[in-house]
Amino acid sequence: MRIKAHVVKKETVEKKIDTDFIRLDAFLKMNDAVQSGGHAKLVIQGGEVRVNGEVCTQRGKKLRPGDSAEFNRIIYKVI
Figure (cartoon, rainbow, N blue to C red):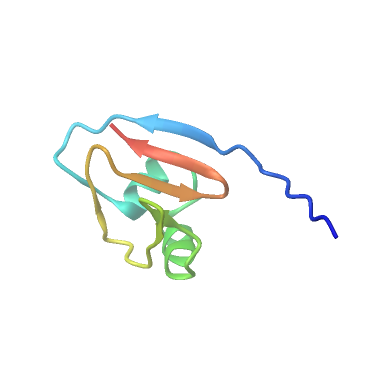
């Protein structure tokens, strides 16, 4: 029996920040990945967001340059 896997290439978006860090919920809003802060809270606490490859449920998670957040098959990189 053979199983075929379809690999979907993920889009990557880079966003520069002018501060030392940015909160995860604010970063998702900045990139228009979510519609509002309330939407960000729901998707983060629902386990739909990965930070550096691991599921993150902390909406106040600090992201620094070099970190990435993934939501809806799009990878958002902090630069």
